[in-house]
Amino acid sequence: MRHLTAEGKTVGELYDALVIKDIQAAADLLRPVYDQSDGVDGYVSLEANPNLAYDVEGTIEEVHHLHAQVDRPNVMFKIPATTAGIPAIATLISEGIPINVTLIFALKHYEAVADAYVRN
Image (cartoon, rainbow, N blue to C red; front, top):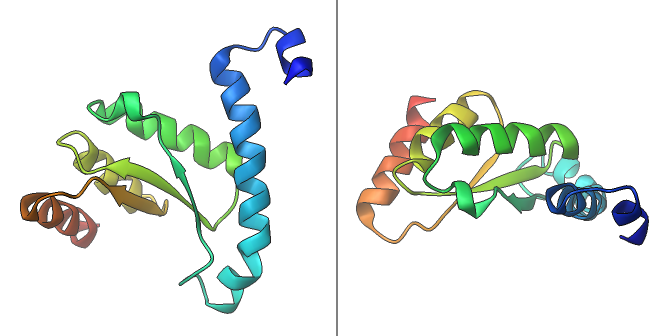
């Protein structure tokens, strides 16, 4: 972290640098499980910035950024089942990006997520 700080990295860049490497290492460790199960198991989850929970486009951009940086097929991206999260979830699923939906506290949230999945 000192090296990155000395380079003048922002807090966001520091976070990305540290988290991306950890997630990649975990995904690599679980990759044999992912491969042997034909993609049914062996996933690692990475949370999209929770400050974007009510920002559809921001969430989509964040997940696109993280997906490109991590570059592992067995990483799911956590997105909350908020009113803005549902359309982001639908868009990202339609693009083939693995999503781990969080904060499903009511049947209406479950139904909205299921509908987003089925539509895509």
